[in-house]
Image 1 (cartoon, helix red, strand yellow):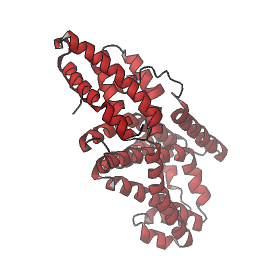
Image 2: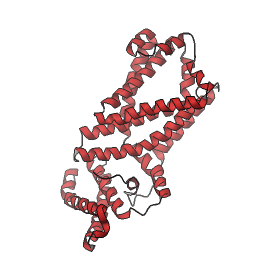
Image 3: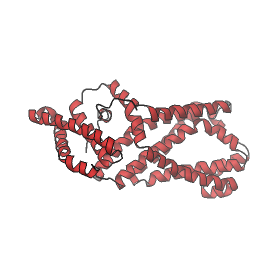
Image 4: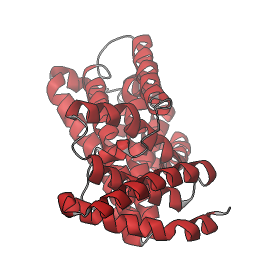
Length: 334
């Protein structure tokens, strides 16, 4: 059965379930006994339909639609069932890493929007730093410091806590710009990725030309893996918002955007969590005089822990109740 036939055969039941869910969300105790029985029957059928859609149409918009529908049904029926600790456990051990994997193609696209300008900027600035500065104005002070072998980040050692705060604030700004930029149909997200990629490329290319590359990478290496990953994740969250606006599929544009906003909201937990980690590393370890082998170890260990968590956590979770994960958010339905 193709997806369109599956939708034609089932959509009447889904629409009726949506009506009952809305009534239950308003006042479930006001529902008649036969409506409650129908709600339970249609909810169980929808969970079965979701399992079939995940198996047969994993990349189709109908799977996202059913995932949200079942989540709404679970909210209406089991809203008082989970404890706060249980909700947090489900969120961190299943929902967050699984949502990252489901939206990974957008994260990969964000990486490309960052990496391509970075590569171009590196090639140009490595040949001539002045041409790199023409491509990315505003970096003249940093390049001038490179010419005199001044490691400006050492100033952070004077007040690590203050430095970490400044760095964290900057990382939040960049991530937020890439994240929320999806609402501009992705234009601001792409611009934030492009600009920061080009900046890194020009700086590292100029450092290569001026013989300052060991100094620069000695500073960047410890926090770079986590920090750049956060930018890609935030950019990916923004791009999937843009995709929902441009290509809503079978859903209305509003419904597709609400579903994408839920996924972006889920991913924001990882962004915040790893922003704090990157800020601490960049404020306390990166500008220090610790040996380079230790900074490389921090980079490898933090990256392995981060991606091990995101790619492998929650894969063996019992899926008898596929709505439990999204139900913990309980966003208001439009």
